[in-house]
Image (cartoon, rainbow, N blue to C red):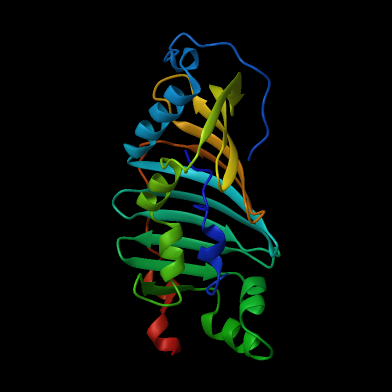
Length: 246
């Protein structure tokens, strides 16, 4: 398992616009999948395999480094659909994101536009965009990083990967948003992490908390596995093509 620089969210917010609290131990449910009785290594492997098969999910996470904390709340699927919000470090506003295939729509609120556009140009940008979404494709330099944040395959690889020199220890049973789980802690060459793996149904990864050697901290929760993701583009009148702004 990797605690993931995956929430490369911070990278993802750079340019354009840039959880883990353990619950009390819970008893096994009637549909216990038996994973809590396995070794830490077996739990980690089962979770990697389950996450690799996920066709869609929701991720709510935070990445904290020297620049501050970036927050994300995203739903994405294998078809390239993605909806959600990103709040860059500094809490200077929020970006709403819609991705459908190679098309990306992004709406920055006024506070974020002011943080991204220096000086008097901010007022001009706000007036020009007028509360609309910016529309472009994954080829756009402005939107490319956001496309990565909305890439389910990217996160699946990150959260199902195994770091070099990984040492795993099984912890106690717990609950994550009401779902029973088992805790596994990990220590490797570049990062340490704590994971909660579902002990009912599929052994999905429900929460992570990790710190890498640079001091970057990642916390994220996962849910809505294999549920439909509706990425409805805004009406033409509610978006402006990036090519018109260049």
